[in-house]
Image 1: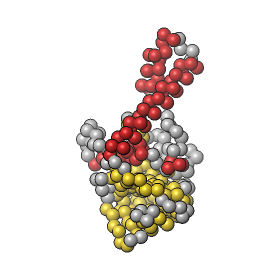
Image 2 (image 1 turned 135 degrees about the vertical axis):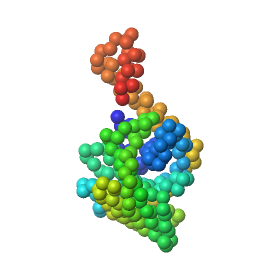
Image 3 (image 1 turned 45 degrees about the vertical axis):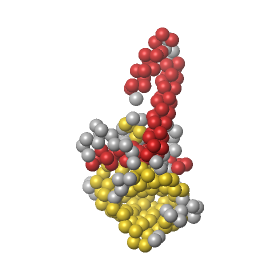
Image 4 (image 1 turned 120 degrees about the vertical axis):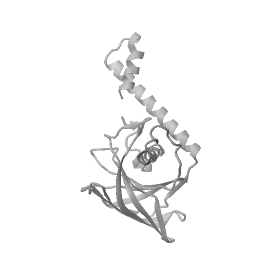
Length: 231
C-alpha cells in the first residue's frame, strides 16, 4: 500500500522514508539494532531540483528531476534519488557513506560504502519502507555549496559486492536548493504522523472492502481488524 503515490516528485523523499533509510543502515551495522531501535538522528535535509543526464542502476537507465541529501548526527550522509520508473513508483536509491572531504569551498566529496535500494517489493517496518542495504564502494562529487544554497552538479559512481554498477550525473536547474535543519523531536513527530496516516488509510481501505463484500454490521469490526492485520 502506498500512502500518497509519488511523494518524491514534490520533495524527492519524505522524512519518514529518510528515517527508514537511517534505520536500515543502523540495522546492517548492529545486530541488536532491530531489537532496540535507536532514536533517529537526521539533522539536515536538502532538496535540489534539476535533471539527471545519466541515471543507471545495474544496467538499467532511468531519469529523475531532483536529488536529496541528508546527514545524520552519527556522521552518515546520503545522496538519494527517486527514479522515474513507470513500473515502480517506490523505486528509490541512495548513495551512502561516512567519509567526507571538502577539497575546495565549492567541491564536496563523499566516499560511498553502501547503496540503499527501495522498491515496492520491500517490506515495511512500523508502516515505513525498509530499503535493502548493499555494501559498495564508490564516490559522489558535488560542485556547489549548501551554505550558499547553490549546487550546479552532482556525480556519483558506485559498484556493489555483486558487481552491479550505479551511476548518477545530475545538473541543477539553477534554482536555490532547499536546506532544512531538523531537530530530533521534529523527526519523532513526523514519524508518528506517518504511522497514523498509514493506519487511517489502511482502515478506510478495509472499510471499503467490507462494503464491497456486504459484510453484516455485527461482523464489520472483526472483519476490518483481520483485514488490517493481513497487510
